[in-house]
Image (cartoon, rainbow, N blue to C red; front, side, top):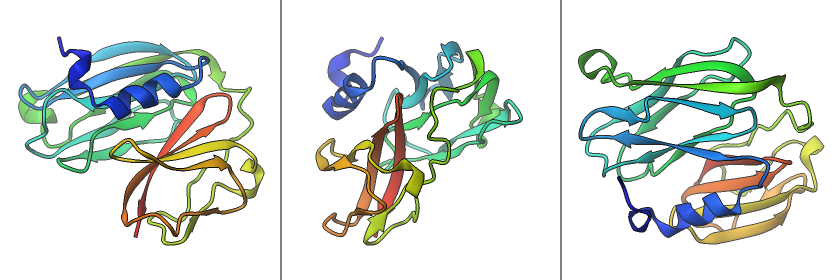
Length: 198
């Protein structure tokens, strides 16, 4: 079992800062044995699935959706050291979500699934058109005019908070160094996005 002292402090901080309404469920990407651990998990609608490295990635993997509810957003995350430390997905529909590591699905049976229980959709969350744009970004990011006034924080991969406040029509990111950042927005549940500043 992996001890908490081996998990970077900023990930623990992010996990602890999430709203009490939602739970983060961890799935480890185990490079050494080509497995997702656990391979199956059941969560509640509104919870977050977060994939973390169980050991240091030494090769490329993917977290790629294969058979998921028809209304759900697909995902296809490339997982490769050193840039990728975690990936999050917040299901918006109940049902079974199957996913694979495309390079290792056939040869090592690297597959996983999670089941989402609850109402058909998240009705209490009226912020339905969350699209971070542009991505990559140079001077600003936006989440759409209908999502103004929501609390946000922008983290670096080092765990440091670089910007925080409330969303406006555009969030000025010109002071950020060129790098990968994570932005969290509170909408009743915490929503997390990754973007590249260039």
